[in-house]
Image (cartoon, rainbow, N blue to C red; front, side, top):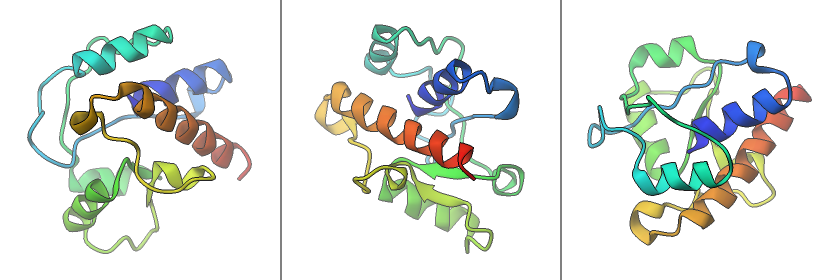
Length: 135
């Protein structure tokens, strides 16, 4: 969800040509699968599409290529640190670190509460964009 929310916010701000936004999994469980149907529906409720997206796994090359690597929760953060080793360039952070309530994004996989996830992702993406634009 975060990839498409961020792309939407960036487009609304007229900044699409300044950002490259991609999501990737830290595990292999969903590789090749499209966006989970309830997440697709939640995005569509807000006029955001995600057609054509399939899950891919992070690679070591992603660390070198991207300026920021944003994790949704501490489990993803641990996986990233295992995958990349030491974060010498300080690129890895949690999405909710860019809000007034740091922590994990609510995981709808376990709760089925896609509204709580939407609220967290939207707040986190807004905070992240503000962080980028004030730097």
